[in-house]
Length: 280
Image (cartoon, one colour):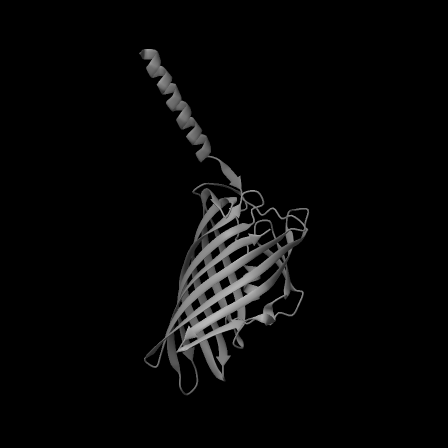
């Protein structure tokens, strides 16, 4: 009987020892670009916008459906990648104020952007190979391209550990510019199968601030707001390329108009976006 207990005790020790080793396993997360590879993604998003103007509440819904391609043009000796980003198709559907409209954004299709990213997802250089007439009201190709890659930790990370990223960006719109300041916290959640790929699952939360100014039909406008975001992304365990991502963003903003009829227009926006790998 004593030998039986000793055998069971040894098995328990071995079991907990294996658990400890697994829990301590760390992963060096970095993008492993391969020259000549092309990745094709399907993007879908839906935004619900509510604004109040002169005591009247107005609601709008914007839904976009896009397909994008990313070709690895070259890989540097240090692992950094030279990538060609392009929009293959872009469609937006808008509804509100009793109107429902579907637009094909053909002016964006086929426009190429060259981007140099570090193997940890940092944007190094950005070049327009074709003139991109960005329709930032519905879709900003430049913003999509610049922020395609999440910023990875740049060090070994264990399951459950966090790392931070800060993004400050300027988007030209309405004759002015909007500056966004985003603080992101990423957490490695583990491994999981997604869309037929074995992946690292990474969850994230973010706080953002928005400030800007512009001019619409001769009226000066200033904007100020903040928001929160949360979501998840899945990176292939072999090449670390994105397989799937989902992002939820909620923002509140005040738009203040100048001139003789100055007013403040409160606005809220909730957006859900998904990106899925459909070809590689």
